[in-house]
Image (cartoon, rainbow, N blue to C red; front, side):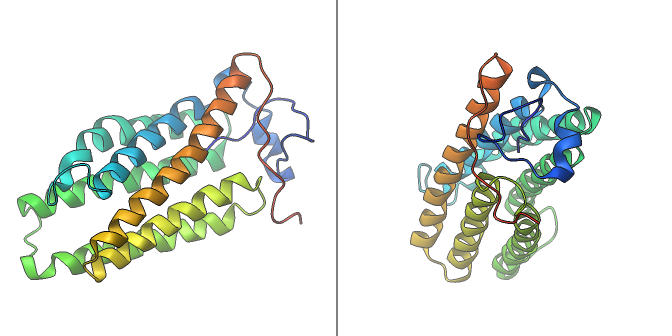
Length: 218
């Protein structure tokens, strides 16, 4: 999650006053979003492709190499980087999503190889526990970002919809709902790509991309 850095034209990007001190601590070329956003996107794209059926049914582990070796590591590094440059909120968001992706990989591997001794009859219930717990946390995060430019809560809102659709797909054994969750994930990946291109444009000497006004102003 990128927070616009350095001095910017507030007609293009609006940053909540509570974050302005964080924003000014890191110059545009030292923005952890340069690593955090593409790490987030590649994991989401991989999961989306699995969910829309690019791999045969039952091959849930197809995304794990990306989730473990690229997304989780990249986002943990971006979280540390963000904290180092004084962007605590950004570091918290990256760390949270790194935990989500890593725990998803552990869940899939654990269920596939029976690491946790969970019987076949409890696999769906275990997936529901995982999805409900993370859905609650990410909805909380979405609400917590309503004072940021509107693109951020919209992106996280789409993440919430993706998790909800997948949860309903698992609960109702509905391949179409699971496939729908994959297509929604491509939408928030597109928003993430827009954020990344804006950060990259600013880091290479250009202007930040407009992100919209905050939903909450006070």
